[in-house]
Image 1: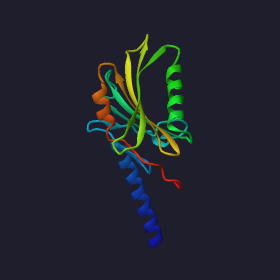
Image 2 (image 1 turned 180 degrees about the vertical axis):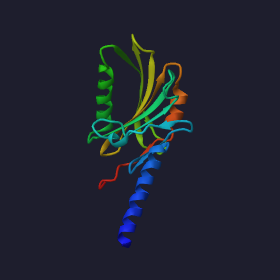
Image 3 (image 1 turned 60 degrees about the horizontal axis):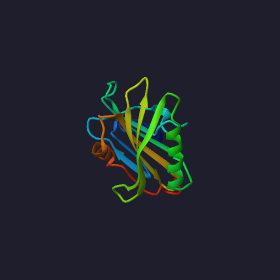
Image 4 (image 1 turned 45 degrees about the horizontal axis):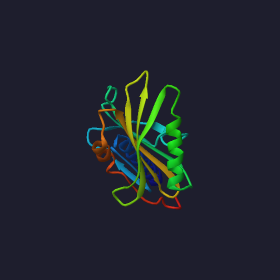
Length: 179
């Protein structure tokens, strides 16, 4: 009887912990941490989070408004170098789509606050049917995965200082080999 109570208590605690995580303004796993600023909202991705090219986490502010901004965390298995990942991502961005033109404005190596090497791509996109957008992407390799953390919004609503501030809580370490 006590084993059943223990199992039910554990299941309830895990369910509550996952509900708290979905409402949390942070994303954490054994290799990385990101904390969205106060006032942002974490979107509930349900069971799709991180599966089949779905983002691991999405944070938004001013959801549903024209000036909405987002931070999207994409994580995929990857065994190449940071240079390989950057090259692949540049190609993806340049391909864009038929009705969107993408400009890679700034591309440079950076270092995260905890010393992890990363790469910054600042891009802007224009479309005949939508307002111009701007994005800041931090590209990182943790030894087993590629990590793309993108902050985006309308041109004029985001800038270098804001982009760096929004992404400043990001840190990545080498992903544990046995995870």
